[in-house]
Length: 563
Image (cartoon, rainbow, N blue to C red; front, side, top):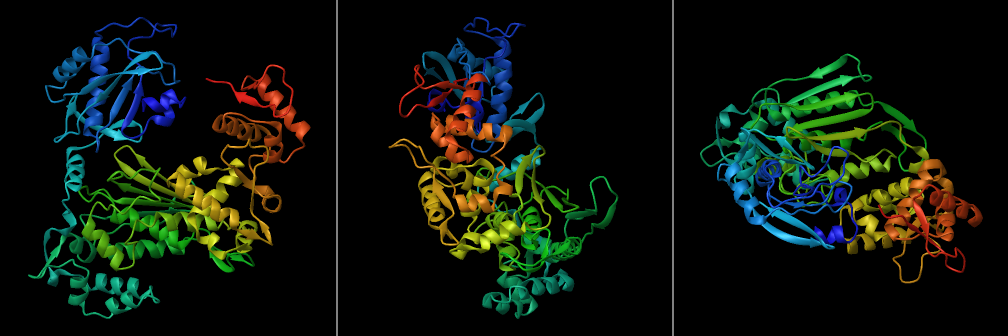
């Protein structure tokens, strides 16, 4: 954390679910200037006690680095570590003992405050709060405890329910066989579909030797506590709902009815050529299923609130009760190993071919959207907590799908890493392994390998990416779309005009520490003298400064202005 700030990273780039960077409260005058600090600050202690109880309630706990403002200014703190530890202990009703260590940030004294993870929820002002994304939100005790039980290995869905085999609804078994029959090329699915009703349930591991259903079996084949899914169809934003599916009964039956309604409202367009041909839906049906099934299977079943599916125009939004679990965040959800909230329920869904056994199917959902030229799904955590997945559909981009169809090897069009990088290149102009790693949610070595695959791909006998010209020897290689690929996809290159071009240049300068007219000319597709004018204008605006005072000589470059 401190190393990141020393390296010049902004607090917003360091603050994550479990890490927060803050200045000491009460140190600002009305005009915004910084006031001297002291060894004791009651207002700061009260504020920090509230923030630290929130972090302690969060899975994995975390830390606060005290002494740095939101803009990165190193204000420091003179608070006494022992006084602050004891005061927080008192303010938290003697329930929170915080480890406080003094740190040095380039000559500025800071404090690192680390609370232990709470064994029981700690209330502050009568409320339980934990962190969602980078802020604290209220959570009810049942949700907090369910998360704690999950982290301890308890699986509610594997426990005995009050139902027996005789309570299973025939309609749910019929739906289960239909889902299995849709996986026609899977011999194991066909074999399971042919089993007797009782054997089917036993092989799904949702019934014990005494004929009692587990909670997973009861949900899937008997009934849920109220409607588990609320599907609403609107033809346009603000319009009245034209279709609504909201019913009780077996979860499998509810899923089937919602999937049928979503498919009927998912408009079909005719595509003549490209990666896809014939009739294509405006939202890939596989992505629709993944979004809905994941929202249902991985939701919090301790609450009766339904999963809300809003299908407005060509946009599908799935909002699911319960936040992310087991370290999953929007920044790692594509590649994070499978960590279901309810293992038995997730395994049964996978056996029924509703969801991925190896993971949560997000990678395939992302790939199917990007392959048609749509935006990648937006998956986020909301206060409550809830998880929201948004799919923005529409007619497939036929130029884009034609481009993907012409690439060799053909696996590029199904490779989620390469699709993410190609989409990024269209929007941002360049990529290197440091930029690619968080984009594809992998380590830098894996990102380097993925870029290697991209660099080998061919489009009409030409590479689809090229090295950025002008990068100094010894610096990491960066890549852009090749001239042919850039010409084919020129309508998608959002970074080549106006303010977007300026942002691209500044992004390059800040990420690489420097920028030259040769690099800008190659990235922006302009003459080198015009690239020089673009850099001069950014210097005039105060964003860049010359690398050397005389502004001349071979290899002249600009640096980003710090702050």
